[in-house]
Length: 153
Image 1: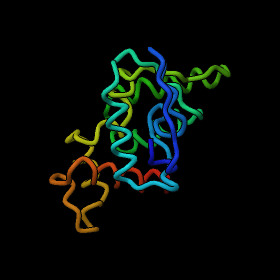
Image 2: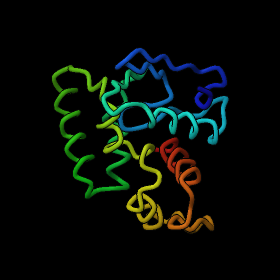
Image 3: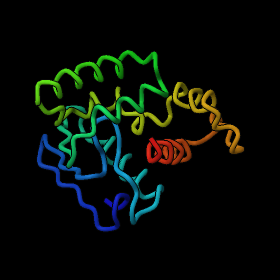
Image 4: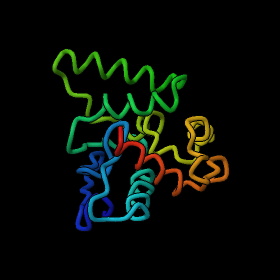
């Protein structure tokens, strides 16, 4: 699954998806050797797995990813509740992963690039100054913008 690196792999054994640095709980990996198009295709593939798939990622970035998501979607109840849940787990030295694909589709903005609330939020935070109309932007472009913003967070 190219994107994070050119030779990145996924391993799936029902119900477990070992996705390394492609998808994290609440986020996705940085793009080092691949392209945003490759990473976006990898994310779309993961999104097509069964809802009960357990997402086993390589790192514990859930809280930071959800804090970023909450900046864009401060009123999203799924994100707020899962951030609270994750912070409580981390405070008790408990992991927040794995999570299920069903949960990730609700809390992970990188799996929600077609969500009009995300596009409206991008417009509110000033993305239009780059000449991008986030309300007309396609899912790949939205993904690319989100990834660049997350890199700077």
